[in-house]
Length: 215
Ligand SMILES: [Zn+2]
Image (cartoon, rainbow, N blue to C red; front, top):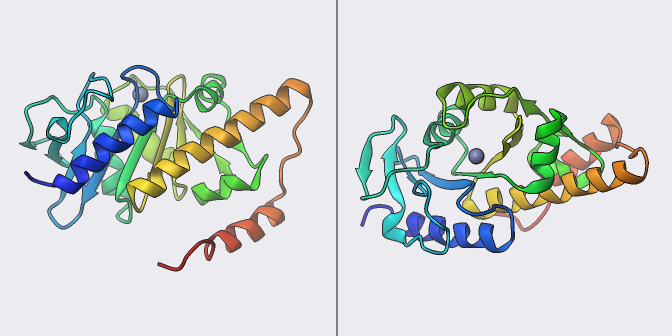
């Protein structure tokens, strides 16, 4: 089986995404990119995450050519492919409809630096891309354009997309963005959140570059 390890991880993190309530029903999708072969392992379209086995995960190239798998790939394959094309360091993409991130996407408002954890997205502000129909090439284009050098972007009236250098880091980023979005929402319910200044976030972003265990 092609990309066996990657397909197992996509199946495993799909179950995690459902269990952690970052996605409801069959919403959201995940992929891992293998730059050596120019192939991605992407979750299948419209299957419950607890039913997806590694062999249900589809292998395609970045031009939507099916390479291995019997299932139809996620309807957002173009969104995933656009991230790998634009961001050569990306190895995994996670797309969720998590409730708090999507709440700000519905408002067309960015996630702000209400907590320093936003620096995990390599930015002090996660912007919101303009609305385009799900699964369309236009959505893929506005998402990567709006994301810029960050690793996370909201999709208006839709959800969140993040990328990372591994499935583990992309998944952790999707969880972190939901945490920050929830804080922003809750703070706005009772008052006006204090947003960290550019200088404060610059210091955090610098620390994040060397945070954690050396690779
Ligand atoms: Zn979606």
